Image (cartoon, rainbow, N blue to C red):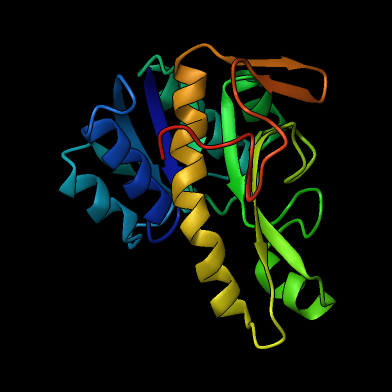
Length: 215
């Protein structure tokens, strides 16, 4: 499995995924990390793991579409099996999504399709839900609502804030994202329309469904 990871921020999910490759839990490599922010701490995470990393400045391009075409050309040079969005905070163009459709995944800090977009944890707290969580999904043109691979559920208490809920959710993000990538690398993930099934996985489980196997 050869993957390219796109980041914008701290790189905590990148670190969890890189660690999984480093420990041999996922066979293959992260061939490249790309950031749209020069000051993204995740670039230092890539450096710590010896992963090639690059900053590509959106301001150098006239439009989002031009920037994404540039990224497509750069990513395709790596011949990735999978393109992984790990805290990548730009809305992707239709051309980018179509180019990598079926091999483009994201993680979102809610039980999608609830609380799409930015500040999903704040949205959950303010709405007063009793459960939230995180979702690994294939990326489609429908923002944060692509076919679901795996979800993790966390309970809320009346005392929870955006920060405390984010920390609860992050604990599971760092487990379900590398697990989903491993399942894909093993050829066990099957998609038919909106339905995604991991062959041989155990379903009907809490707090993660399907159940974690390696993380």
